[in-house]
Image 1 (cartoon, rainbow, N blue to C red):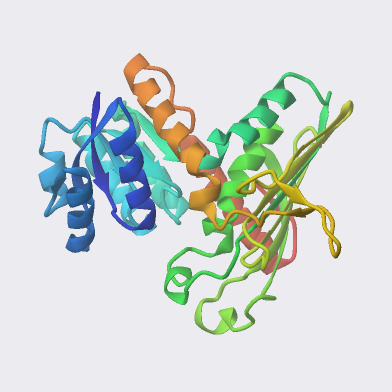
Image 2: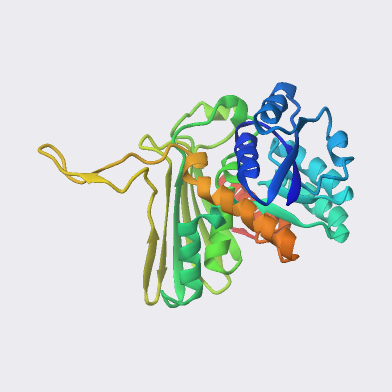
Length: 331
């Protein structure tokens, strides 16, 4: 039984709290949020304690691990404090929006040897995982191209967009991590274009984009294309295709059921797409926690490391630079 504290009790924090409470090898001892009532609501639901400060949590010797689900601008401070206190860490992505802060954080805490896992949850999705294993097993021969489609069901609120770090660092960063994982090689060059096609007003008050395309190349010549958009009126669109010398692998969207309907006016009508990431990746989040606990109990390597978090952020920075400059950027 690993005893946890939760930092951040918003939407994703509450989901993590539910997973911790449901896991037979985890116990939630503390919940903390800068908005006290949010922590109190989690504490009441799961029978843990609501903390008044981070220091109060980290001073408790019973706490063995922390799960960080707070806003991105708090991650480095919380990771550093938890590592100094000797707590294992599972932290939502990204580590920070500034790669210099990410590097400084790792330089400080790396020597402490504290187990750290970064929450790129899509790697744990059973379908995605099956595709990655098929690639490594050589089912499609020599990998040539990875094509990733990633579209949200709707534009996020302005308050979120103003602090998210932009579409490349906030949304597409998941796809950069997936690209590295599927390609099996580090991209060495990034070319990106970005537009404001959903809401042209983003330029005025957010200075962000809502529609992007990215092309990447590895040293061996493998190619990756990512297309992303903040709005797909038909739902949360998450697909990819892997093409190789011996064939192709595809991963389609998940739906609530596999039922299809035929009638007088239409054929092959399917259930709508799942609403958003908490529904689409619910199982992936549970597996993420399970593998974190397994690594702690066995002393094994964490499946997604701070290095993975850093590299995805580096690709996001290169994509933004390319989109703004109109040229290819070396990684």
